[in-house]
Image (cartoon, rainbow, N blue to C red; front, side):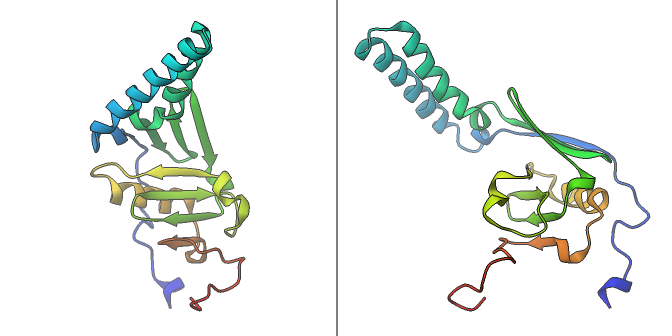
Length: 169
């Protein structure tokens, strides 16, 4: 039975890991588009409203809302928690609060909710895999999270609390 087999991480305590992902490294041309949108927002604020402060606010809104893309995000996983930092934004979840881990091709969502639902998108921490650390992150999450198989989802989480989709899956 699957419950009788020792896990790959049993007896091994992974070390704490920290990594940075900058989405602009994969598509640097999009950085120019963001900068141009910021300039347009600044010009609209100054020209249309004749207010320099509104121009600066428009520019700041564009750059602030795209900070994850051009500034990058720092991820950390240790024996107590998983955390994500982008600029001034900081999110963390203690392992004792993690009820479900949803692995997908880009990363893993650590959720404090036992099943997917409407609030799932707004709760938890998403750890995006780096260029070459997918296996290391997966091992750390499984070891530190100590989740049972029923609380680990591989692929998109269709929501166990919802009815079957029209195809019956």
